[in-house]
Image (cartoon, rainbow, N blue to C red; front, side, top):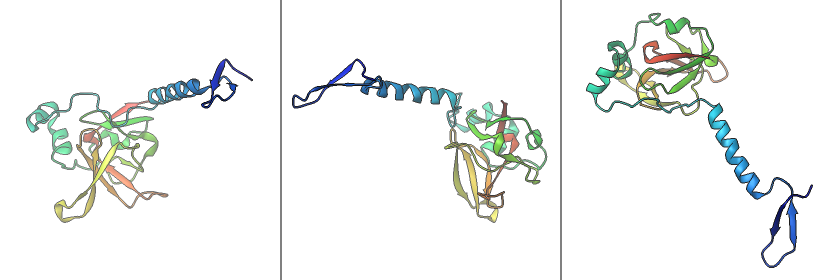
Length: 176
């Protein structure tokens, strides 16, 4: 079907009509589609609040348990977090900056006493080598604020065989 968007080609070429999806429609349609996708996909590593800059600000902003886990990379006692047994659909966010880091669809019972996940949301976390406590592990940090969330191990379920073992004190659950 010919549309109202005539295009004259360089060099004096003849006038041709293009259908309703002309150049402008494609460009603006693509931008609209991206905007809709952005609205439909939850913010992944975009913190919702101002991130403290100093350790004194962090201490004032977080509870003592959150500070110990998120800033000092300590580990909570196993089975101490109610998030270990959380079964509802939703999203797990960083306890410090509210960036969404894991989906409930990736959560599973690892029987370790900590909330465990198969995979994080895309670009939601950073992984770094952790050689503390005489061990070589992979530390998991929030992609938004850099706070410590837990560790990732290679003993998870197939196919990736990863177990993101996190501290419940460092997470917030947002029900669907």
